[in-house]
Amino acid sequence: MVTWEQFESEANDLAAMVKARFEGAETHILATLRKDGSPRVSGSEVGFLGPDLSFGSMLNAVKALDLRRDGRCAIHAHPSEGGDAKVSGVAFEVTDPEEKKIYRTGEEPPGDFHAFRLDLREVVLTAVEGGELVVRLWRPGLPVKTFRRT
Image (cartoon, rainbow, N blue to C red; front, side, top):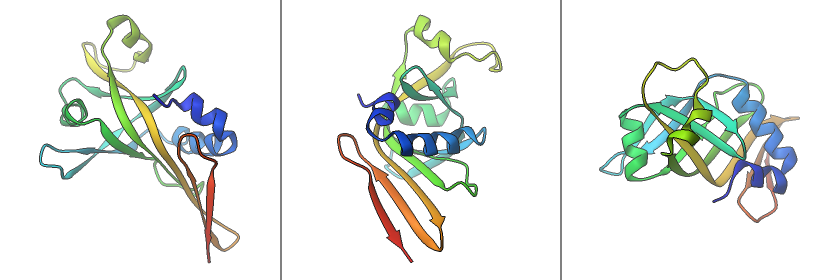
């Protein structure tokens, strides 16, 4: 499993920029796959807990059911002037009740919920810099690739 911590160790500068984008807003867009393979987009919050990028869901929400069936997903950070950040990978559900306790912030409604951690497969940050469109791409085990377009 490729954790956020591994991403930070392989691409610290990019990880810091992407993390700032996710921490810059409360909600983001989670893309999951429906039973028929078509995309579903939903609002979601993310957190950086221990070594992981994680997120949750209300119990039995359709996005959680999508992820239980097929964990492939992408999360797009709320757009801002700081760049367009996206992560993709495979979500794995945290089911151990003791482990799930760290996902409670005190703001959730009482009762059970779904908690997921993301096995990172790709991170992309796109921004306009000095009149150029700059795309930074990271994949596990590879150096960051930077593409510039005018």
